[in-house]
Length: 108
Image (cartoon, rainbow, N blue to C red; front, side):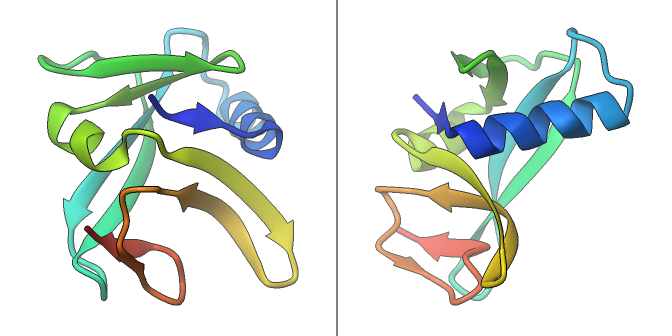
């Protein structure tokens, strides 16, 4: 399961509202090859289910992960920071053995 903090929930809802997305949309979270640590996170809004998608809902936010990404992201918490030390979504991933300085890529 992937969980969502209060700050991430608020930001996702704000982005959905700004982009005028209805309730048929969900947050697609995935992992792709790349980044300085080997794997990087990707997020986007989507409204089309794909074969093999794993769906989770936390704090009213519906998330979809493909099966490969689920294996890397199980137990991850999605957070959002708007502080001086960095602004944006953060993945607190217990499966990552190493992360880069910017927090956008990881390795297992």
